[in-house]
Image (cartoon, rainbow, N blue to C red; front, top):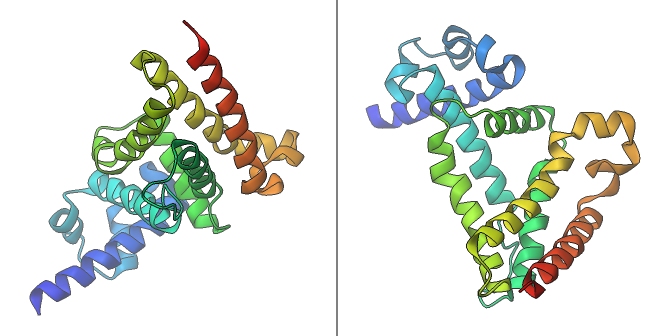
Length: 212
């Protein structure tokens, strides 16, 4: 009974923290506000998560894991799918995760994750190690198959190019919506942008493969 109650309290804290961090950001959010919303004792955050900063990382980790469950990296491909098919699926999965489902709270959490990617805090390493690096390894594996014999530095740069091209539509989201709304991800749609990034990447990969 005690373990079950602990699990419920921990889940309530996570759900409350998701809302409070999205509304106020990590600096303005307080443990007291989170616990009041979760109907939990203020000591519960330390007990279950080890402090506010670790709770914030738990929220981001949960956000990434849920988005990956909704849009898995291979998007339903068979185990023996070709590297090109896997590349297309990877781009499509990433763009769907960046676009989100239209929920303002989820969009704000995505922005907080982007902020951590640009300026990582002390505890962000757990999110990197548990989820983001394994995700990136999927892309590197695809690139190594598409670029056999090519120096690993070039492989790494090609993978960064694909990721960066996709992240542009998220990092610059607000500016694009204001200056060129016709080029925003939500206006163009994931399928069109996936096709564009994929073709652009394929041309770059072919160029790198042809270099001596």
